Length: 102
Image (cartoon, rainbow, N blue to C red):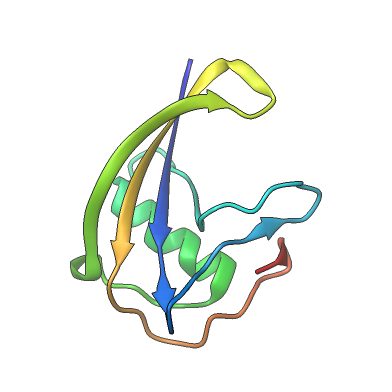
């Protein structure tokens, strides 16, 4: 089974934003699952708002690539990650309650 997700590359001041969700061991790029009816860009925009309270316009996303790998802890499944470079956003990056650490 394939699990489709979207992720964003956010760089500010030569620093790459990564996050570790509560109860998780690893740091990952911000993003998440694509809901039914959403494009990957729309999913990333929603996730960036939910996780970091930043507003991103779809025109501020640049395709970076599509990557596939076994899902962590679910090796029978494959994660298909559509990755975008986030060129511009509004707001101050603030971790939500679901994010343990940035």
